[in-house]
Amino acid sequence: MDGPDLTLDEARQRANLAFIASGAEFAFGNAAALPLPVAALKALHAGSPGVEAVHDGGLTAEVLCLHHAGRRWAVKRARTECLVRNPDGETSFLNELQRHAELAPLKLPGVASPVYGSLRNGLVVSPWIAGRHPGVLNERQARTLLESGCALIEQGFFEWDYSAGNLLDDGERLWLYDFGYCYRFDPLTQLNSAGHGLDHPQHHPAERIEGRHLFGALLDAGDDDDDALSHFIAFKQLAAQAYEALADRLAGRGATSCVLGHYRGLAAHWRQELADAPGGLYLAAAWQAHSSDLDDDLRGRSCTPRTLRRALWLQRALREHAAELRACGALSPADAALSDAALLQRLCQRELEARQHQL
Image (tube, rainbow, N blue to C red; front, top):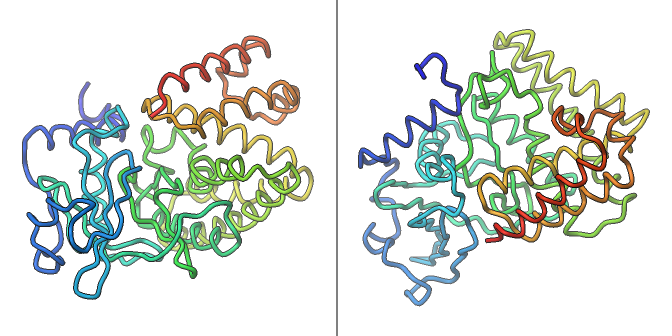
């Protein structure tokens, strides 16, 4: 396949896999700003002086909290083998380094800035952010996360993974600090970094936040339908405001009518549905979020107990709301072509696959 025919994903994957295979170094920052020499940071372990905690639940890396000379540092070390077993997983650490190098001078709101990163040394070192991973988003958390997501879009960065493990709440705002699945695109002519930039309009920051975090957090919290709907409505209202403001800023920079119509159209649609039929909007968004995240986890063979809860939610929703799901257009074209019985059988099969690929 020639270069011009490659999708954005294929071109990025091909370039990054070739770079890794070359053995070349990619580094940014200043090693002199590190709390310890690079070799010492690479050798740290749970029993090392100053290491206060080791967070090893990440699929790409582990993070050590190092207390040194009165400061705390996050020392992120790449796994020998990423647990997400596809080209995006294989290149995620290099991709994270590339994004940090590009993002650091922009100083975007809620975007963490490491002081050093190195592919060959498998390190990203940042000042420690004292905070907690969020659960169900409150108004402040949702507003600041949407602010960061839209700021990234405006600068040509599409973040795909807003999962809780990549977010920290310091009490004032949410911070994004992991950019292994954040990719470049042209925000004035394209909608995201998938395909050729315009052929997957269903993916946008609010959808990514819903899919990777919001609906999963609601599942984990065990909220009843009324509480879940209330959280969703509050988030969607904030998302509509954020998209209207984003469209205005992009218009000032000469974005195409397609791009502007995308964000303004979504905001207008949400406002109308929130006024007329918020339950239907919630059902469609929840179905799409759980379906998308289930697909992501199965592709990467990186399933968790939450993946299983998503699979079971989809089965229950189909049994109880099949007609409504079809009427509101929640189903993908492939799923919509199946009978209810065939679609339920497919979902049950995907549940079995998720059980086989538990981390």
